[in-house]
Length: 447
Ligand code: URA
Image (cartoon, rainbow, N blue to C red):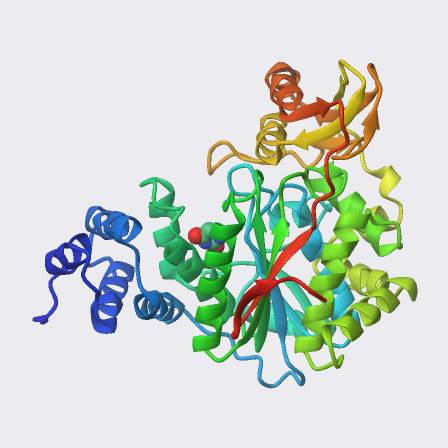
């Protein structure tokens, strides 16, 4: 086949900081997906894009090409606006498991395709699979059947969804090109736009446990994500939220499911519930079941208080093959073989909890993967006793670690010990949500 495009010229153009046409980006993605361009040339393109950036048009063209590399799910036969949420990833971030049943119980269909743990961050699929029997792998026919029956489905990325992103992501992982705002934005949005949604809420994390360490970078990523959503005519609202300490008190797959069960019984930790209600309230608002985000938050609280969210959770666990008895009686879940405590060496206030280090310690204990092919241990993880701002006395427990690998305890303990700082004075309270981003731009958060 003759073509006016030449992959070397496309790489050179990006290397020299010039702007690529939509057709050039489309050509590159199509040919790569068809195995007509080798990994080494796409790696060069990725590095050139990482170093020189992609403008809004290039980013939209990349997203569209990755989106069109697979199927776009048609859920138009299901009445009502379909709304999903995506988080850019954090430590102890279990919000999807709580908010998806809340929103579905409020009558807004939630087609949710999630990912696995990445680096120090946990993944919704690994948490769901810690429920004995729960299945996240399915084809599109089953995906559609579940959402039709329950207004909710919790699935992994099927082979039909954005296959180009799957290949590009694996290549980025091994070519040091993950941390690029336009590449992250294109990757996330190509998958979300393929799910069959009408609107999207984004939780963009900022802080030590997030991919974006500063609020400014998180705002830039949020603006890129919202920009793409808007170009594709999906109403998209993002919030920048604090990830300078783990969310809630539990980190690790089953431990986090347990905390979600507490939350659905109305006993969730304050930080978890504040962000969960904001995100679920926004989803309910975007799904036209509340007149404002505030009214959506009130409706979310009603879904918890009435037990409707918990009933929706039981229904979906049963539908997707999970052991409902374990959800009703979580104390029956077997515990990890080993547990150890980290104690305070002096009196004071907890002033820092480095979530990156805590996330890495949980990986060490078995809750995440060091290599792609590793299995995760559903019982491994960490339970915090204290959080930033809490008073602590010498000898008191700061946190407890759980693992089935005795050999991991020493390295994890060192990491955990170094992750917590105790100071003489009480640190200032930090806001959980700093900014809202929508099609009008970004502004300080106000409800
Ligand atoms: N999550 C994704 O899906 N893609 C990225 O590039 C980063 C996080």
